[in-house]
Image (tube, rainbow over all chains, first blue to last red; front, top):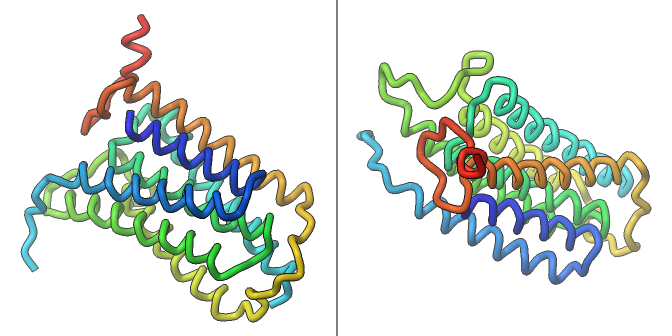
Length: 52
Length: 183
């Protein structure tokens, strides 16, 4: 469900970027990017079996 | 760099992003390979990569718009690099099938890295980025690119809803959750 929400939020950012105000587009982009990073951190829990 | 050339480069960039999103959807539909959570996140970030060019086409090229795409590309590179590392051990078959010898997440890493390099090159040569002469007129070529990317993102939203349903997406999806639920 969170990925559907992310795609929908990106759609909203695209629509605002094309038809809406510049400042609102930047604000919504920031929110969508932060939500993407949060989703990544939520899913990136598997231990990487690596040694550097 | 001429202002109209800058806008044209952004339109071409949008068609490139549309090509990536369309190829991922084609693989999903034709090969019946459902994207995993990290794969979906990479698609989301490819879509976010398009927002900088959309703003550049509408309001005119500006370093801040390129910065948005740069942030999305860095996030996408991190996500795809993590997926590469998850499958880097010997004898790990990787996730999904390979295209020209590389898995989709490896191609995604190449794509995001190429985007970072291309944005850097454009910023290096575009000496009129701070030009505030007003938004250039968007022709059919530009309108088509924007509508294509918006349409592909909408299709991805629908396909993700069908795949994951109303719950969390499974790590290794093999069927469309919502379609099974509706039957």
